[in-house]
Amino acid sequence: MPAGKSHKGAPAADPAIGGDRIGALPDEILHRILSFLPAQQAVRTCVLARRWIHLWKYATGLRIVGADGNAPVPFEEVHEFVDSLLLLRGSSPLETFDVRVAGAAVDVRHLTLWVRYGMICNVQVLRLEVHGNAPALLRFEDPPLASRHLTKLELRGLAFNKDFLDFSRCPAIQDLIIKECSFKHAERILSQSLKHINIVRGIFNNLSSRTPIHTPNLASLKLHVSGGRTPILDRMPLLVSADVLINSCDSCSRSDNGDCGDESCKGCIPNDTSSVLLHGISEAEKLLLASGTKTVYLQLKQSYSCSPYFKHHAYLKDLLIYMAATCPVYFQEGLEMLSYF
Image (cartoon, rainbow, N blue to C red):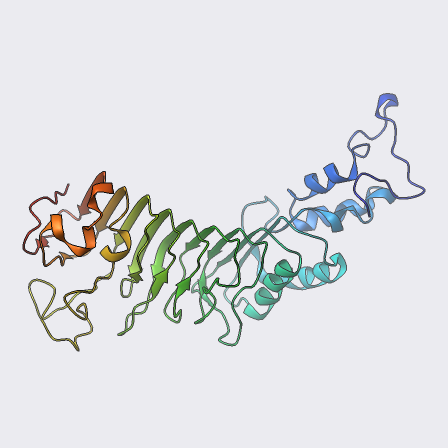
């Protein structure tokens, strides 16, 4: 239905003589209004009048949420409704697609189909939240996302497969927010277009491998590691600010300075020239490092002024290092210029 036109046989009432003021609005305005309603309520507007029968299908946003518009909806109560809704709605373009479900047994096959539907509808902002006792494991055979229109992605309560976070086929994505998710099976986070990453309470692989993050055009990074091994950050030359909080125990237990010298040790950095965090964030203008673990190791083997990790340290304006009250910090040789609070 073309925007701004009413259905045949259903002329809009004249609000000046006490008619339906909302119904007198152009269709494109009503599509926008409907996009703010939970999907269940938006669909119910089809009974208001003949003109409203199909308006919900063209809403610019689709929200699978609780009745209050914010809380998650029980998956068992809504999954059949959503499957039918998407079938009837067709492929009308979406600006936003918001899915928030809860339950102990969320079927990820439905979630995957819903996400693919959003990609078909050229969604620009996608939010997918699963509230349950444990992260919902995405199937290993599910391919990564592919969209030329997706600009922002928010995820919560998922356990990623190896390729889901490969955004090489999403050239427009700029914002990534991930909360309370598991990265244990993720092989990488990869994007040439991402500008902002916010990872809250991420659980990473606790075995020998680390998850690499390759986002060379990133401007801001917030990384909270609550479990597993700290991910490897590749160089981020455009980084302006970085907040890194490590709450997991990720160090060598055989050495007082965090490096026992054994190249096969899973708790150590592979060699003297490697870095897990500093290689990626050393060019930031504002840098905050924090830890709630027992020990923080800053393994810089050269002086601060000539360290390969801080060779562009002239850009660094603020550097703060926070730790737990009982947390000792070990500065290896040459860190006299590094202060902490």
